[in-house]
Image 1 (cartoon, rainbow, N blue to C red):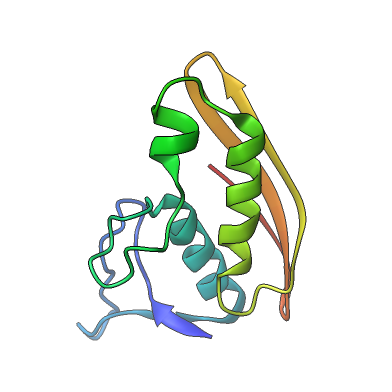
Image 2 (tube, helix red, strand yellow):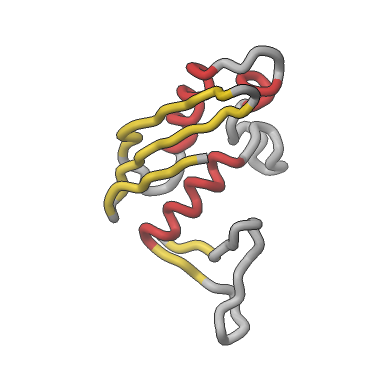
Length: 114
């Protein structure tokens, strides 16, 4: 697995030679999984049926932790090379929904939170 490297602001990173930096395997999977969890359902023009249904389960009324967890598990299994969502825990503290997850990949287990 390979992808372009992004920084904490999701901006592409340049390598020392001025070319776009490329990451692979575990690092690429981890970055991709974070991006998959940040994508909102309907925001992608060519993949409008992909993303987390945040409007329905988080923003649109009373947040539903169980639905967010179920949607998060499904979404993480859509990341290329995801083999299993070993654990996924969602929490609602005040008005903040957060999660922690562990995903099994061919390169090992990846802890993820957001």
